[in-house]
Length: 365
Ligand SMILES: Cc1cc2nc3c(=O)[nH]c(=O)nc-3n(C[C@H](O)[C@H](O)[C@H](O)COP(=O)(O)OP(=O)(O)OC[C@H]3O[C@@H](n4cnc5c(N)ncnc54)[C@H](O)[C@@H]3O)c2cc1C
Image (cartoon, rainbow, N blue to C red; front, side, top):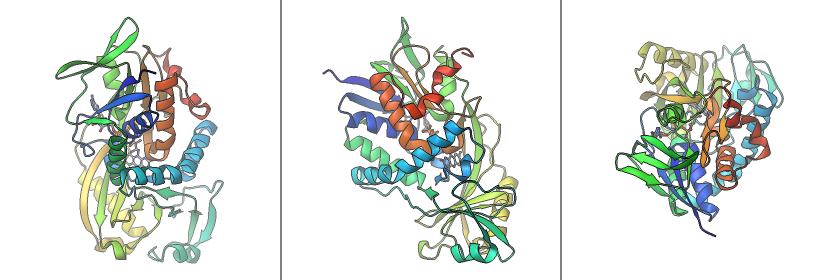
């Protein structure tokens, strides 16, 4: 059988993992294009992300279809991480660390246990003595999104994916209702199929290509990271504090986040907002005050109008969308990859992904 030629636009977690799955199928020759030097484009969500895999806490108000998708994605993570690590030879930083909620506004849900302050400090001795109650979500996990991106890139390349960096796709080419390739600075490059995984930039790319699609917008998140001695990290579990979350990683980097702003693609950092995040984190775990600030940055979460992912086809034949993951693109990665690959190869979405079919935006488009 002739292999399909497939272009994947975007080398974040969505594009790299979809490309990897497509190459593994043996049915496609896959090229990933990214306008940045992978995996470190400024503003890319994967690079800025905290890497929390929180299928319980993040979904406390979610519609049932999204909560089911999240739980299934969470269940897929151990095997997903192990497979990437085997194939890529690089750790993803995946760890089943659990998460403690020490802020007042969080209602306990399924899989979440209420604790008093002493019980919380048994799990996380660095918590402030002022904390008198907490919720423990023992199933939550984390991956280091930066190591994940590196490992995925290598796994994809080992499977035969060609990764083309510093190359912006200016337009998706279409003729007679069918996608014919991508247009870069070098001209048209012909492909049988295109997977659009350009994160928050996906909506703009559809627009300049004169293709219908959901209005995917950037939701800016500012974050900071602290670094310390990995052998003496003052916090080992994810902590959701009043006004900030704390996501420690095994190499000693501790991500503190995050703002959530409708600010377009504005990369300006608000030092006062970042200082507030740090102050909230220090209030919950006082010894964080001693750690050095390693980085202040921001990223753009890809969000659709209804806050749900946009997957599969819309508009011309030969186009697959893999976007709209909003706050949970790391958590969702194993299922987004499978959904994008199945759609690109067979024109179908797996049943769990069908509620997020991009076709729901057909009328709006
Ligand atoms: C501050 C912050 C914290 C987060 N924390 C978490 C978390 O704890 N857990 C979680 O699950 N999710 C989290 N998220 C959300 C998660 O990071 C995103 O949902 C996910 O990374 C989206 O991945 P992506 O590959 O679609 O997009 P991106 O990572 O943004 O990748 C898109 C890529 O497309 C490329 N691109 C764009 N336009 C073009 C073009 N025209 N041509 C070529 N390439 C192009 C970009 O350079 C970029 O590399 C967080 C997000 C932010 C911003």
